[in-house]
Structures are given as structure tokens and as C-alpha cells.
Amino acid sequence: MTYKLILLRHGESEWNQKNLFTGWVDVDVNEKGAAEAVRAGELLKEQGLLPEKLHTSLLRRAIHTAYTALDVADRHWIPVERSWRLNERHYGALQGLNKSETLEKYGEKQFMEWRRSYDVPPPPLDKDAEFSQWNDPRYADIPEDERPQTECLADVVVRMLPYWESNIKPDLAAGKTVLVTAHGNSLRALVKHLDEISDADIAGLNIPTGIPLFYELDENFKPVTKGGRYLDPEAAKASIEAVKNQGKKK
Ligand SMILES: O=C(O)[C@@H](CO)OP(=O)(O)O
Image (cartoon, rainbow, N blue to C red; front, top):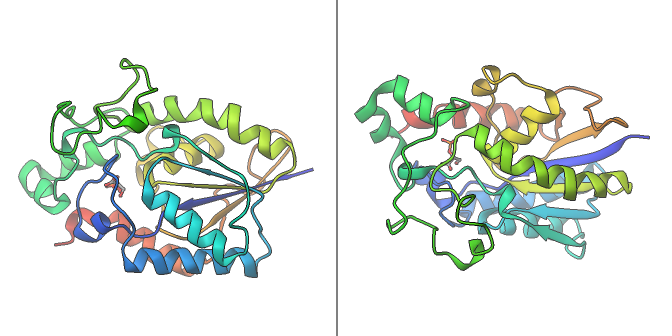
């Protein structure tokens, strides 16, 4: 018996396009992102990977990507669960800043430490700052001592894993094909766990926008093939490079 898990990062967002740190800021997908979501749905359909349960974050770029992809695959009707635990990493005081300007201002080392180190969070974002979500009603249920003002990837692993264990795994165990539609860094956290990637090596892993990543999992929820399989490997390769080089783009 194996389990079927599909991971999907939202399609390109308005702020991916503008090259801004996004985190918990609730921007939508842009035109390219919407087209990526359509393509994702076509890939699911073509390859016969039809989700039976959807898990998403609380952010519209993930919610809209999932809706579009599932609509195209005729699976818009499946049950859905959403959780802040699948949200993008909270990017702290970097939220809303331009990635190229941040790279120029602080230098490559500091930039990469904030962006890809496992355990160094960016400076915290003030609760009343323009791009703060502190008072957003959708997060009112998160106790204040757990509600982030910044996060490193290690923090994302800590808040995401309980959801994986208690909400996603049971659906897989029930034999359902599960789609998780989330974000670059929340999916990096999940892939790190699944593929047992070290704290150092996870820095080199980037997730492309809008391309389904399929994992077949064994009875211990371990990948049959490490790294899974992108449903469009060529497109994934190109997009991974683009994500990697984001700071360098103007
Ligand atoms: O800005 C962000 O929230 C993330 C994902 O878009 O960016 P990065 O890849 O730099 O972690």
C-alpha cells in the first residue's frame, strides 16, 4: 500500500513579479500565476492524479491556485481544510521590501542568511507596521505567544509538522489522494521532513511556482523516490533557477 501526496506552490504572485519579500502579506496570483494554476490542473488531469482532499494555507494566492487547478481537473467539489500552519514563512521586517535592494543594502551573506539559512530569522515586524498581520482576524485563534512577527525555516517546521501529523497524514492513511497547496517555504519545510534533508542542505532547495510535485509514500510515510516527481520536470527546472536568482533580478 502506498499513499499519494501532491504538493503545489501557488502560481506566481503579484509580489513575486515585483520581487518583494511577501511572507504573510495576502497578495493574489498575477496573470502568469493564474495560467500556471490552469496548467497545474491540466497536468493533474492528464496524469490521472485526481485529488480527493485539499489542504491549503489561509492566503489567497494558495487558495486561488488550488481552486483554479481543481476546477480545471473537475475536482472543485472535494473537501477542503485550511490552516495558518501551511502559510508562507512570516518574513518579519523584510515583508514588503524589494529583494534586489535588500541584497544591495545588506550584502550577499546577510541576504542569504535571512532568505535561506535554517535558523536565523529576519528582524521581527512591529505589530502595527504597514505589512503586519498581528490584528488580522484570521489569526485571532493563534495564541499571542505562538503568533509570529518573524520566522526562520526551523520555526516553520515546528508549526507545520503538527498539522502534517494530525490533519494531512490521517487523510493519506484513509487512502485519499491529497493535494497540499501552499508556499515556497512552508513546502520547503515539508519536503525537508519527507526527504530527511539536513539543516545545511535545505538552503539549496527551491520550489517552483505552480508545478505539482508528486510524492508516492510508503507505509511509513517515507517517499518511495526521494525528491518526488514534478509533473512537468522541464518547466520545474527553469522555474527553480528563477526562484534561486530572485535577489539578483531588477
Ligand atoms: O517572499 C517570500 O515570501 C518567499 C516566497 O515568495 O520568498 P523567498 O523565496 O525569497 O523565500
